[in-house]
Structure formats: structure tokens, C-alpha cells
Amino acid sequence: MAVESRTPVAEGSGVHACWVESRATLGFTASAILIHHPTGGSILIDAGNSSNFDAEIEPYEGQTKRWLATFPAALAPKLPLDELLRELGVDPASLTAVVPTHAHLDHIGGILDLPEPPVWVSEEEAALIERGREAVIEEVMPAHAEAVAGLIEPLRFVDEPYEIFDRHADLFGDGSVVVVPMPGHTPGSVGVFVTLPDHRRVFHVGDAVNERAQVRKLRGKTLAMKRTDSDRVAANVNVGRLHALAEALPELAILPAHERAAWVDAFGEPTSSCPAG
Ligand SMILES: [Zn+2]
Image 1 (cartoon, rainbow, N blue to C red):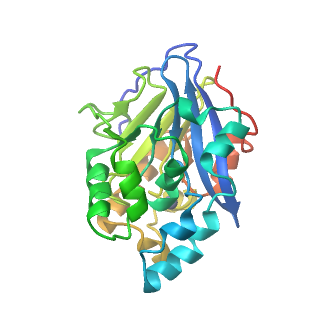
Image 2: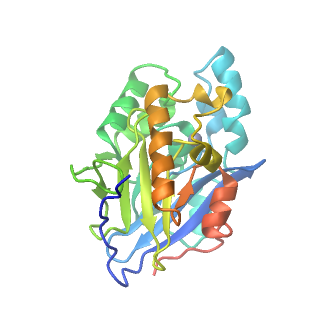
């Protein structure tokens, strides 16, 4: 497959990226990438779960509630995200934006622990969040939809290819952080390419796959995890695209949101300090 030209990262752009882990359990992680950009400020890719998780699942019933109280609950944060950021030397009020890969609870919940940052999502994901305000849906928790809806600023994709994707949004205009649409897991899911100063590249794929082995083996999600995909056909298309991308760019670190081993490979260890500048 042909690989489209990519926007070069400005030399010495000074982008600094840290692994912020809000919870780890049994090989899974709930994590964010904290990116400091010298002129664009600091952004978070994903925000993990909310510290108020137990109360927020109250509107659910039956099997859905049992599932939430079992799996996602195991990734509830030990510290609210604002406290965690302060421990890392970051003022939570200084964030330029949070860019969730999608609106599921374990990706936007942590936003509720922050002092109302702008939240950059695709139009499709904004519509999903709006649906979460109108009815109790599994994809977006009512408390999350209510809190995040007023913070949304739409991602502006341009109709120009980036790698194997047809559209992209270059957040800082220098190719250091590039968002691409990856609908399937949710209607407006995105993936985020981050180019580090040493030119290593990380591709945060959200929950497009649960683990890198799926990309390698060209496999969709397991039966147990398929229930989390809103469009299984589109979700499988993403696996095929990621497979082609990994073949074309073997040095690219593909980062599924919850595969802790992938984060260790990309970043080493979770950061204990990540001050700007
Ligand atoms: Zn997730």
C-alpha cells in the first residue's frame, strides 16, 4: 500500500510527551499522553476514568451495570486526574485541551476531575455525546455527557491524506500531533499520531484494537470485547488499515489504549514528573 507523504515535524519543535497512568490492573492500563507543545500549550490525549465512577454508573441496570461494575470499574483511578497532574508538576487549569480518542467512560471520565478544559472531538462523537444527554445509553454515561457537552470544540479535519487516512487534523500545524478519523468502535473515534523530538512516532489508536496482536494477526476483537464496538464492520476495516500501516511503517509504535505492554514499549515507565518546558 502506498504511504502518503506526512507533514514533517519542525526541527527542534520541542514537543515533550509523557505517559500519565491513572490505573493499571492485570496487564491493562487506563492512561493518557500528556503533550507539552512549546507554542500550543499542553494537551492530554484521553483522560481515563472518573474518580466518581461508582456514583456515575447508578443510572444503569441489570447486565450493563454488572459489566460496568466489573471491568471498567477495575480501571477507576486511584487519584482524581487533577491531583495526579499536580503530582506530576502540571497545573490542571493550564491545559489547552483534552483530546479523547472516543467518548467511552474510560476515556472521558477523567475530564470530570479537571477544571473544565476544552474538549476536542469529531462532529460524530459530539453527536454521540449529545445522544448521551437525551437518554441513558451505554456508550456515553449521562453524567459524562452532561459535563462534557458544554466543553466541546469540534476537531477540524482537512480533506488531505495523512499516512493511509483520507483526512486529518494537524493540531499544532507542525506535524507533531496529528488526529485521524477512525470510526467503528464509536461513530467518531479518532487515532492520534504523536511525533517525539527524537523522531520516534507513536500512534494512539484508542480502542480500535485491544492489543497489538490483533493488528499483527489481522483479527477483530474477541467475542467478549466486540460488544463495545458500535459498528463491527467499520471496526474490522480499521484493523485491516492498521495492519497495512504497521507493515508500511514497522518503526511506528502502535498504542492500543489499554494494552499496558504497548505503553511500556513506547514510553518505558509511567512518568513521575512531567513539567512543561
Ligand atoms: Zn477503553
